[in-house]
Image (tube, helix red, strand yellow):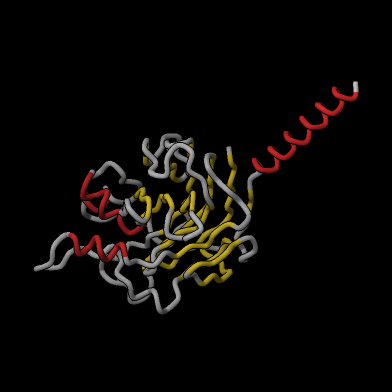
Length: 249
């Protein structure tokens, strides 16, 4: 009898611990509570009458190139080198380890004042972020591409990357169009994003669409990858976020 009771207690203990690990996180993002900022300035503001958090890059990092394309006389590799040297701008959700599950958030992005012609308002979500804050998977959007009068630009509205090795430039060069897609979005407007991660497969859903905007069947961190979740933006962007919900599977 004592042995049976002990087994029951152990079962309850471990199931409870597992339940705690599986608990998600909800952040309204009206302040910085629950976030660790990396190369990021956060300011509570309202956009289109809805409260949220504005994220921008510190002045000493905003001058770095934003998806710079090779200039005349330079090789394609110069763009890859610029991307490799890009600063990582993250607002990391503290105390949560994520492997598989769903991430939902409302976000908006637009090029900042004085941004280069290649700025697109790059804004998204990184997951499985490692302690070095340089290694992660990420889905992001280019809001100024959504209604551009150029089909090629429209085709680059949504993007998957996995830093530091699989940058947008490396993926586009090796596997054109596989990790990018079109979606109807505009800058400085709230966009609902849901990311569904299941092992080495991930799906990006935009604005409550039933079908995914972008499908990735080979998430570069692998089937068992894990790490933190972070709000992600590029240094030339003024980014806004609100209502973050993380539900680990």
